[in-house]
Image (cartoon, rainbow, N blue to C red; front, top):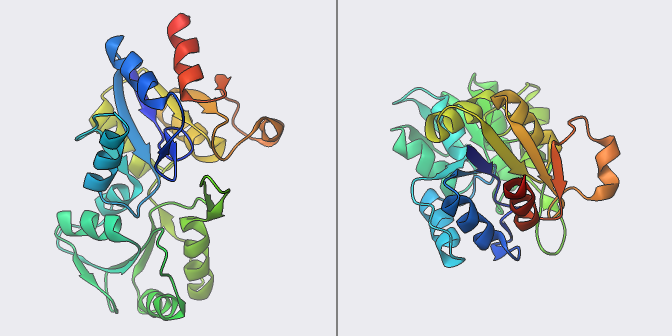
Length: 250
């Protein structure tokens, strides 16, 4: 079976390991399970994500999919894009030979999580969409989990651009089809087990893949939220370590 594991809120919070996560991944691999990591965090580059995982004892070279890569995958090779995101989005666009610009006209505006979003960025993105560019979001998560609680996420930035431009954005990351297609390419055919902390993204990705969904309560969702969620998990555990222990015991 392939395990499709979220990062933020599952493996770590603000790159600090959630206790037992690295050991849990090691247990899965010792049991012969395939493991891939899927994150809606588009700010970090792939090499940074892999290095951060290695720093907590998880080897993941070539096993990480980000929403930035998903967003780039739906754009034509050789097209142009206005960057409204972080280094991970730039890397993904350039890897697909997409010309990155700071002003329109362009073929697409790509919005992802970044800390320096300001009015001038909003103005440039709005104008490029007004000139005919596609509006593509890496993901639409409204918040991003940290050890100090949630902060505004890529979805909040995307909402600002979409509201200004008066258009409905295309979203590439979890739980949407572009990300699911990349998971199938990397993880192979099912069965899959998706582990995440958001039913609205990880749970729906599991549904898109025809996979089981394991919800952990170490990130954006706690036990009090469960009844309000539209996607019922197949298993609920406090964290990844508890999830893996329960699944391997079955």
